[in-house]
Length: 83
Figure 1 (cartoon, one colour):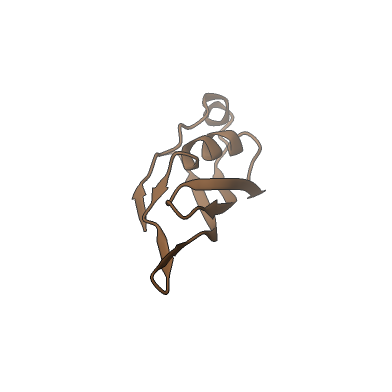
Figure 2: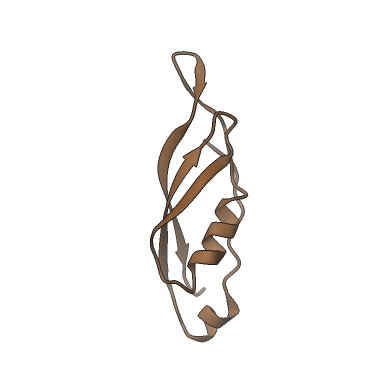
């Protein structure tokens, strides 16, 4: 259902400190497919802002239930790894 995904920018200080990991976020996707609310579940504090900045820009195909658009709650995981 994800139409537009923005990749997070790896924070330079986190890269320098060799911080890797996953940031878990709780998201509310509104009836138009936009991220309406975003809350941190877990993740390294150096990585959280970059993950949130990226996910706030994501766009989803609107979810429907019985033919009507609905808001949905979901969990989003953003992985940060050295490549």
